[in-house]
Amino acid sequence: CVTVDFDTIEDGQVTIRDRDTLEQERIPIAAVRDRLKDLISG
Image (cartoon, rainbow, N blue to C red; front, side):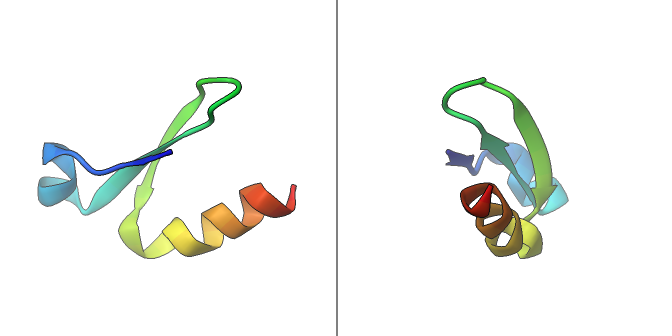
């Protein structure tokens, strides 16, 4: 899941959350596409 929240407006980052492990990471918006490709590819 990719979450856009009030912090996103301030820091230009989103939270990516793994559905199975519930692990979270904040990354820059510009990096979302590449990070999702990495996660999907395994």
